[in-house]
Structures are given as C-alpha cells and as structure tokens.
Image (cartoon, rainbow over all chains, first blue to last red; front, side, top):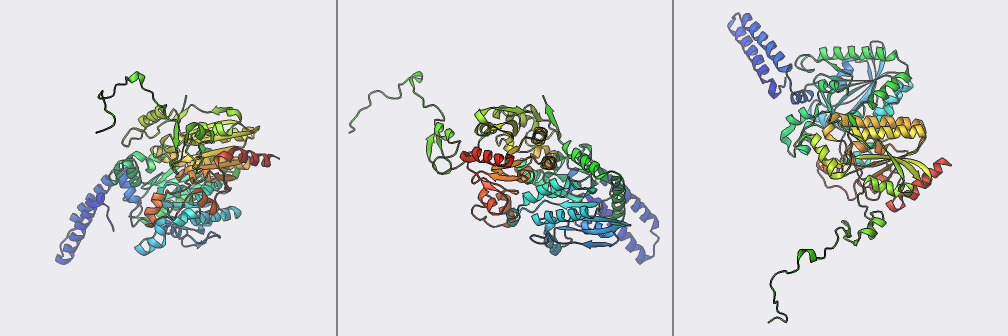
Length: 318
Length: 281
C-alpha cells in the first residue's frame, strides 16, 4: 500500500500492528488487547484525517497510484461481461480512451472512459490517460452506436487533460472536443458521467456532457490543474495548495455551485482502500440513475440536459 | 576649432513655445518595420500596406468594418462578471475586473450586436483581447448564449469573432462549463438551420478553440492567426523538440482541414456578404 504524506500517521499505526503481531507469533504472547487498542486508534486517526481533507489532499487522493481506473470499474460492475470496442474509424485506436458494451445485471450499457496505466509501461501505453483527438472521436462513435441501439451511456472521467502534443494539434484536438460537447447534448439515450479521479479541463468535459454528472468524493474537476494554475497566476509552482483551494474543485464545492448533480461516497480512506465496496456503490448509483432517467422521454431528457448546462454561470446585470 | 560657436548655453525655448508632434501619427509594423501614417493604416483596416500583417483590433473596429454605415444595435451590454468563487490570486479577481474595466472601457471580453451587412441581417458576437486576454468566463458564455437566442428568434445568421487565450481561470469550473454551454446552444442554432460563421482571429486558443470557435458551419480565419488548443509553448515542452515553422498558424490549420478559408481583413466584408447571399438565395 502506498501512503501519501498526510497519511503517515496511519501507516505508522499499521506498522505497529504488524510488529505486535510478529512479536506475538514468536513469543506466543497474548496481544489481542494491544491489537484492539491499536485498531481503535487506527479507526480514530482515519476518521480524523479523512473527514478533514483539504482540497489539495483530495487532489492527491484522486491521483493515488492504487486507485481503481476505468477498466477496473467496468470489469467489476459488469462482472467481466464486457466487450471492448476499438478505433475511431479514421486514424487509429487511442489507448487512453476505452469503451464498449457491457451488461450490469440484465441491462446493457455503453461504457466509455479515459484509461490510465498502473505501472510505468502501462502508463506510457495509456499515454497517462491523456487522449488524442482520435480518442474523443472514438468516444463519439461509440456514443452514436449506443444511441442507434438505444442503450444508456456511462462515461468514466479520469484524465490530467487532453494530450497537448504536435499530432494532437494537427488532427484538431480542439475540434474533436468541441464536437463532442455539441453532439452529447443531443443524444437521445440517457447519459451518466462519473468523475472517478482527475477531471482536468476540456479533456474531461469532452466526455462529460450528461443528464447526470456525478463525482466520487475524493476527485477534482476544474478548468486547470492546481499546479498549472499556480504556475500561471502566481508564476511559481509553489502555490498548488492555495490554487487548489481557490479553484473550488472538490466534489463538495462543485455540488454547492450546482455544476454537478451529485456526489458518490467513497470508503473511508479513498476508493483504493476498499475497491470492492467502491465498485458496489458505483454499480448501485449507475442502476439507480438509469432507472430514473429511463422514465423520462428522450425529448425531455435532451431539454433538461440543455437547460442544465445553459444555467451555469454567474453574472451581474445592471 | 569649430565653425560655429555656441554663445548661449542650455535650451532656452520656453515650454509653451515648443512644437510637439502629435502622438500616434505614425504606425510602425511590428512584422516588417514598414512605417505609414496611422490614418493610412486605419484606412487599410489596420492591415500593414507593405507586408499584410493584421494588427489586433477591438470589437468596435470589427463592427465598423462589417456593419453597413457603422450602424448596429448592441445587446446585453451591461452584463458583468459576478466573481462567483470570490477568487484571489496575487490580486482579488473583483479588483482585477474593476481595474480592467476602467483601463479598457470594456465590461468584459465580448460585445454582441446586430445590424446589416450589404442589407442582409447579421448578428455578431466579437471578443476583445484587451479584457484579461479575451478569456472566457460566465459573461462571454451568457452573451454568446443570448446572441444565439436572438439569432434563432429572428432567424438571423450568426458570426462569432474569436480572439482569446482560452478559459478564464479566475472563474475556474464556471469557465469550463461555458464551453459546454456555448456548444450546447450551437446545437440548437444548427437544428434551426441558421448559418453560423466562426471567424478565428489572432490568437484563438484553449477552451474557445475547444468549443464554439471550431463549431462553425464555416470556420474561417485571418492570415497568420495563431489557432491552437494547447499553446505553442506547452506543446514544445510536451514533445521536447522545436516546433516546425508555421505550426498552429491559420495556414497550418487550413492545410490540416479545420478551416474553410482564410480571408484578409480588407476582403472580409465582401466575402462574408457573398457567402450569406449564397445561403439565402
């Protein structure tokens, strides 16, 4: 288990428990009381730390190397009943954007999402979850497919941004994202978007125009990463904590500002500490939302979706 | 031994006798260093007469160039930003807004107006780079949204002139959502089959490129404009190599298939007018 800097007290207690257990094994001493004490202490510490997370700490959690990624969620909630589909039918298959049909219980769903890798090799293979234009075009192709066969769409958002590379510019990164924003607003099937990690800017929004936009508790969603914001506005990389606060990028802030529709609670300590519990919660949320959205007509859903995004913004009119 | 001898030391002309050259009489092209009078420069629509360099101009200049007899009706001119996040970086965003408003005489980074072009109706939403780098926050999103409403209600073709560094960081996620808002609204305009021309001028980058600017029925640009999603500096840092010459210029974007044509500012009005006429006939 990898621990973040602010999680150090927790890892210390875990180490202590481990040591006591070893002593007990060697010396045949009864340590059950010590262990119970330590476990209580661990529980208290966990609650204390995770219930008072700062915005920057949540950003760190959202990037935790052991956090589940898109395919982990898809495979878990479909019980591996998933057929991955590839390619944008124009340039190539973008490994940073995955998608395909899967079944949750008896419900067929089109899943789409950015994919990160869990080791150095895979991280490179997945381009760190930063799609090229063909990734957004693949996503749109799959959404159209879902629409054609009248299946709801679930997108998992987890990206540090759309890839700012040379070929990405040549092939129209801006156009690809823009096209998705416009087309997603017109989809006749229910669209549920869930931010499961990082929601950075246009690269996230490019698969984020949905009837329900939900954030997991320890994720962030904003126009720029706190680090880049710090470097541009403060002209230094040292103000990332301050920038994270100022950007109001946490799930709580986003819900308070009516920029998302809901928050999905994570297990104490984050999604990676008890992944099975996390998958179960996400599955329930997906099913619940598909059920409620399916009750509306396609026209009504599109109307509501458009109205929701058009209401975003704060202006003063004199 | 010099030929002339200075009898009086120092400058003796009194201040009120001094003859000043009026300021801004001359324009020096930053590209080719050609010098012309500002009068000639303005008469050529702020395009260098020697090399064709297009100087950045403001929304009011575009209105004057495009609308017949410089007659138009501005709408929603009194909308300003609400500073929803009470954002503070090195300076309070609310102070930054007031200062910029005073300095630039603008309310925010866009003006919207309707009028006629060679007698045909046209709605124009034109961005101003002079207001926090032409950045898109709630005001830009709302004014574009309302301009689209006007276009749909009155069946008036829409021209959006983009000139922007991207989303406005001080409105963070609200700025991000303006990308969705404007694009979603354009879907409605498209469904109503009303023409939308997107003119991308120097520079058009970031969230503006990744939303309304790239969604025109016709995407057009002025020569040599910088058009990008990620700016050249970021791309260079990412790939760790020098960028090819002409990367992310309008000509480059045209070559890669994302623009319909490039038009010099001096030809802009006539070309827009012919295009609209073809669509109407």
